[in-house]
Amino acid sequence: MSYQVLARKYRPNSFEEVVGQEHVIQALSNGITTKRIHQAYIFSGTRGVGKTTLARILARCLNCDSFSEPTSTSCNDCNICNEIRDGRHIDFLEVDAASRTGVDHMRELLDSVQYKPTSGRYKIYLIDEVHMLSTQSFNALLKTLEEPPSHVVFIFATTNPEKIPKTVQSRCLQLNLKTIRGSKLINHFKYILDTEKIKYDLEALNIIEEAANGSIRDGLTLLDQALAHGDGELLYNNVKDLLGTIDKSFLYELLEAVFNNEGNSAFDTLAKIEELSPEYEEILKSLISVLHEISIHQVLGKSDNEKIIALSDLVDEEFTQLQYEIAVNALSKFNVHPNPKECLEICILRMLTFNPLKANNSNSEKKNLNESAKTPIPKKVQPIKASINNKKPDTDKTDAPNGEKNTDNSSNENHLSSDKWNELLLNMNLTPFLKNYYFNLEFVKQEKDKIYLIGDDAFIKIPNNIAEEFLIILEKTTSIKYKILIEQGMAKNTPAFLEEKKYNQIRTSSIEKISKDSSVQNFLKKFNSSIDEASIKPKGLNNEK
Image (cartoon, rainbow, N blue to C red; front, side, top):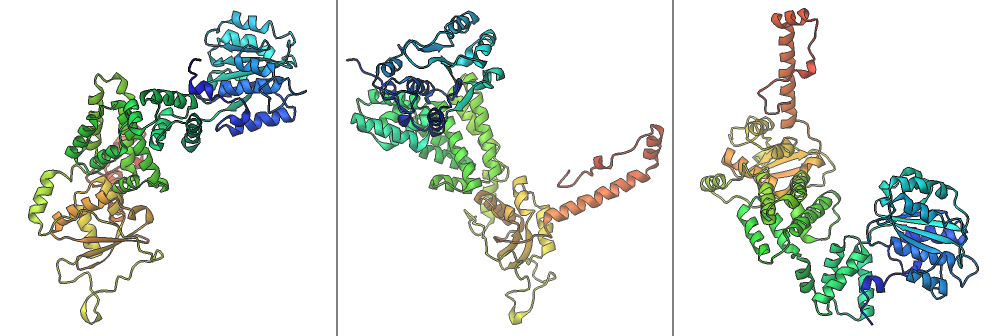
């Protein structure tokens, strides 16, 4: 007896055996039980999720000869059930719309609708890939579909329901089949492999589940392929070599180097990956998947993967989105690129080039800074979140003897006040990423080498690389190695507020000057026009509008 592939051998024969389509099964079973059998059904979904299989199970349930009426649990043993399963029942017509798209084929099919079934209760028409029918075929079908004989049931299967005319959709009961992912698909694989008494690794199943992309048939086909490659066993290394996948630890290492703007380390890791002879397109897809996981964790914080958590702490959400867009854009052009390897390398170079920390994180700058600093540059800065119930810390407390309060006019020239701090930040050459955080924090106090800042919750969660970069620039500007401690609270007197205030003052002055300019007024009178004050924007400010 010839070998039967797993996708056919383990095709479900009843509603109970169908995996992951509980919502569809419930609708069909309840319809049969309550005798609410619709005249036409549309089963839509991606390939390999069970559209045709469900149609055949429904046909057996409607025509099963072991029961006196339609049932939701067919016997699968009578002549009618066996004939429908084998595709040779005279009252079950299965048509491939891809090869019979013309209106003549449809008319030929509809000519038999008026005749009653020969042996079953219903004459059932299954049209697979129905969206490929021509417009004329759909038009020919409409009248029969609207008022079919009581003994006729139409079942349409399609992967593109949006291509079916609305006039047809409105006459059908549409059921959308889900893709099957995660534990449901892996448990199905385990059941089959245990039944077949095949040795397997869980890691190998995880790779196949990801490669199946939600399709049970694709997954079972990959299982067959992997078993042939592994000589009857399903082992991780064999499956990895077969599918051209790589260990995600390399991807984590690569992204960490990109996030830290370490170009040499990034390409050293890429060289390690290349030694495995992988598919470069799959590497790029895997990078996109990891960036997606990082982005989801940054927003929802639900990941239990330590590597993902660590990477998400290195950068902020905006930078992750930028990297994601660069990777997706590279993937969209992958097929037209003459060299897959070069396409991936250019993608990584773009990720490094558009790193907002690059300009202030160059090797030469770090070298000069290390030479001038007496102590090494801190590697990481962890922002502090104090539970202070949003109250501003007491600014009067100080380390001064006898309980004396420090004032802004302290004789110590290294002592910072709120005004000095704001002036310092406004004159520092900060990137937009640094400004986004530190310009929205208010100076509270300074205690020796510690600077206390306060801000809203949206600005106190500063990524490690952003905090590290700010300390580097601050130390270079002041020649002092400060520690920044950030607490939650209401920030008012911030650099961003002062910058906005200065901008508005200059803008107001500009509007007054223009309104008093005689040449401008004469021009307006001559053409009977006016100036839109919203368009007056002063130049020369750090935050040009």
